[in-house]
Image (cartoon, rainbow, N blue to C red; front, side, top):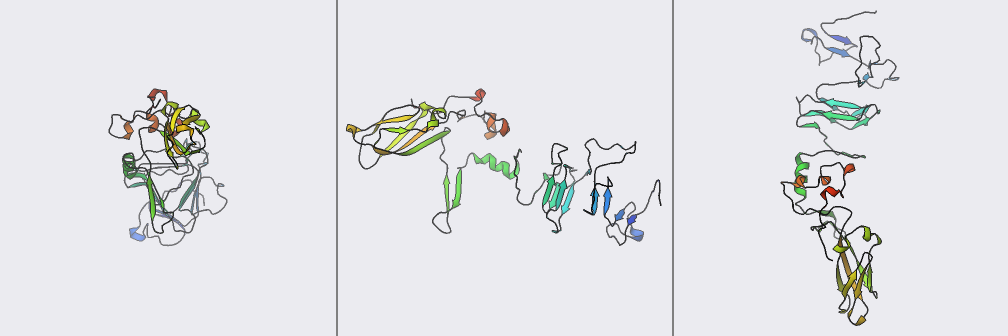
Length: 314
């Protein structure tokens, strides 16, 4: 049978069975609907197989009064969304195409997915996934997150708290102890009022320390300092002079030189540190390239925020 219009004031049921969710008999919910499925909405030939209980594609209705959305959406949900996986498939949520979810602030989450998710963009819009709304979180992930591309985001809560206090804490690394079973090893970075680098080693039967060839373009030569530690005997070794290639040494009476050395210098490829500044947090650091500008646009040699080098030794 073909009908132009059908208006159903009670229930519409397609298939067989009792459906507790929409009730039965005198308690039935008027305006409710049940379809045993599979159900296809949209283009009649978009799906070649029974890929799901509900299959939705973009609007293909050519009626003159039908005006498809400009962004060509297949599904638009106003309100929060929850998916629960039953573990039968690899993903609890698998989307081919771009997705936007706008929460209505009535629940805690704009999108809640219990199970794994996969979204494959079709390139028709700028973003594969946009999630907004939700209180307090637009997106909540209970589990680990793995990202292969770049991430651009702000922070709040525990992450913001950690960032705000990170600069005041030591910068440690913590690893499994290399020689004691059941122990760990924890070291921390040396800190100072400069962006410094060092070069260390041993000089034996020579009167010069050869600096790395790139130091002439990498450090302030007039920030270099040197520490020497004679090996085996007192040699009264002194530093006669230095340039951008070598440290020139001299020992008492011309005796052979054998010593360890440490050479320190301040980098010149980035602006010197502003070691003291007015503010309440690290966000107030005068040079915005360190925190307010995206990584791709940062210029750590920005002349607008250049200051005098921190260390001078010559």
